[in-house]
Image (tube, rainbow, N blue to C red):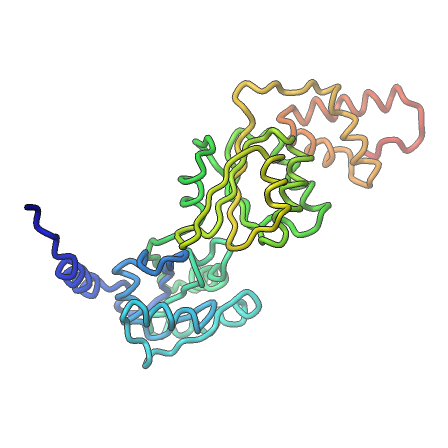
Length: 313
């Protein structure tokens, strides 16, 4: 009969080890990844850091207290202050001062890794500038979790942060991914997901493969893969939860369009007020063609077309 492993004994052993190797004993900034949804994804190093920090800077003070309580870590005597999108610039100076004075300042967000589309960058940047030690306790992040679960072909990938809110900016951003040979990962609000996927289907084509990862590591985790057209129709019915989207790269061997076929888009951008070189750069990146060839083709077309003001150099 197989013996049941003594998990509690192993956990106690690892907790002691984590305390023995506490980071930055002489003070500094400690970034730590927190669970995306399931609190049991917390590392032993995070538990030790919560227990030993002099200051905890949290995106939501209530959530970090609830996490600590669930994990059995006492932080009632620890100073816990808010550090979120709208005050992190002001908080950075205070937190770095505390760290420079020898205190261990633990920076956490509601879920995932600080600085990855969450508060944390401001304090890290200022600490580096002032020569204050900074370290990171690796932990959960929605980006690699979604990429691993999506089943969307990837070797290289880009992380795009949150999708632009406004339709025009969103279309321009998506256009840069039309010829992308890598997977693209981004976050989106459940309230805007349907509109973003519908626009993506228009710009990138309804048959482009993608995956929507919802409520990662939580009870109702869902990964839905399909074409952009299929996903847009699904999302139109309403989606809830934390959302991460993976866009597949263009199929290998997809044909690069001829310069003559896309030079008209350069002229359209120029007509909207962009300078020719900048417009050529945007369209070149969009389709993976030569910026120089596009520029020269636009100039040649202008020379053939005697209409005044058709192209602004």
